[in-house]
Length: 177
Image (cartoon, rainbow, N blue to C red):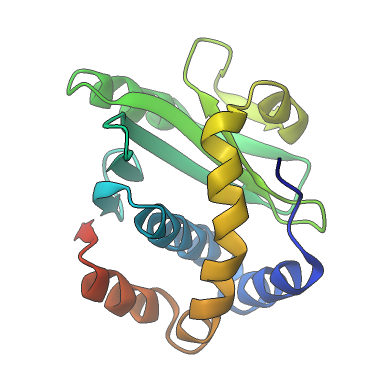
């Protein structure tokens, strides 16, 4: 079972969002997520900065997943045609596509929802992702994520994406432009 973000982690995330703005914060959250997967013994983690889906990784059980990562302070998240197409494209390489979405709020947590036809282009409420989440995937990640945020917060606060890039490089997480 998983609980939403604890108060301290939420405050750190709020500070990072405030300092870096929504767009950069989204990439910071994506890098925290990549590090979290590494800490959970996922392998072949690839972080895509621009083109393609945002993250690729293979679970300890050899499940190939690709993620489109979205964060927002609002009650919904914007999904573009490109987001859906990127996940569909990775399916050709044997990766199952998932949306990884997190509302930046005191009750925030990652929702991992498979690309299975219900996600359409436009603004989608977090409540829809919550209803369609994969808890078996999300629970271990949500439980480990606060530890990663607390451990690497200063890297992200002081040096933004570059600070987390250095951490990822040291962990052997591949970063692609």
